[in-house]
Image (tube, rainbow, N blue to C red):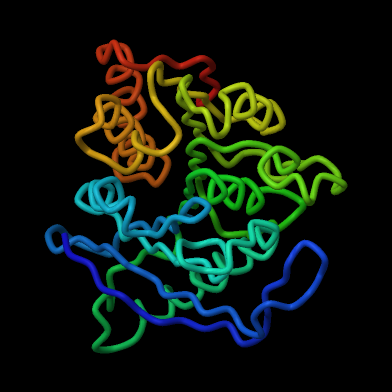
Length: 276
């Protein structure tokens, strides 16, 4: 497994604050791509959305774990919500468009002779994943707010509803999922003091099956997804990898591996399991 960075820019859209004022005229999306260096491609693609005031690199251990398991992982740095950016979380409704743009550009790169990922991406096996504000972005991709076709699975890490994560947009109607039939896994720690597990359960309740909710006792909001030395990182890494391998048809037996990993971990449990 190795990685590369590409500079992408969507000149068709800008970025706005909660009052509708334009902050940036175009969407600059520095994107890190992790990809396998062993095995026979093409490989499934996972597009990952980082959390508020985070960067893709903060999740390197987890994303490289997925890549080592046979996936290309593309993670853009969002122009207004990333660390060091303008700190405008109200821009989140624009982020599904960023994900769609990055998806198109990565698929194009995979068809470009001489690119680092030439021939490595299977356009028929694609998942969306994200943490915190990026988890909400991922939920948007499967909802009326920013539906994007072409995704075969979704993974929501420490997510919550719009009115809780972005109170300045609380007047917007509740998120409504419109994509029944696509599997979605939610992961949430019960010691999350940024987005309480009850908020994650609320978002989960709105999602259609097939779905499952993994609760991780003792897990906080960020460390369990960012730090491989954190006590609950191993079970989250194992379960999310198994889920993606199953949902993206890398290993049809991986769903049972997921359940076995949860049962044997003593560190997490499936509060609900409707994955089939």
